[in-house]
Length: 215
Image (cartoon, rainbow, N blue to C red; front, side, top):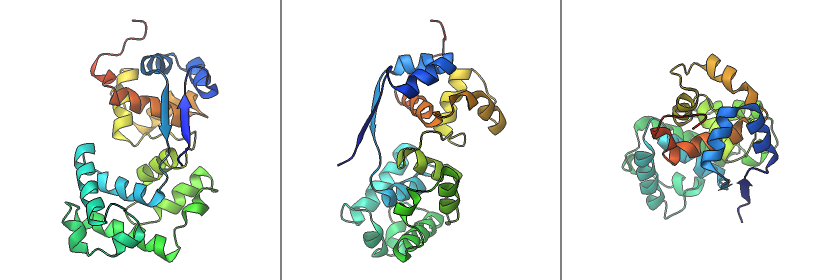
């Protein structure tokens, strides 16, 4: 059974973040308590992230659902291996992504990629192990660290959704790696927790209105 996680005003990480960043503290107050589960199936998570790369959430989910249908409701190395390239492409997946899906599936079935081993590696080692695979970049590896492994201090400055909230909260168009790292350095060692609130603010539609610190 999936473990439930919750964040509220009394959580140590939230108290810390609120003391370090008044703008983030305002976002946390607007969002309120949040609860979340981790993705239990590491393989299907990676396949989902590959499919969704460079696509809208809606388009990515539609393609993923089609693949899920072809796999009889369960996306795993066995069901995907049983599909032809043409069948995978029929879901709306590009040729490049078919190659990426094959690469990951082969790595898992051959034992070259062991998810249990990743659980015990450092953040940097997890990123190194995942990005050596064709089709997995730093963005995907960071999403894995946050949403599968629940690592607390990952700053996803490569992610478009995160940057949308970043621009909103800091009232800036400078989303350079250097500037984002500089402004968000104070979130460490809870950068992932801060990112979850940034994502939730976007999901709730808060970023559609101008950010006001004292209003």
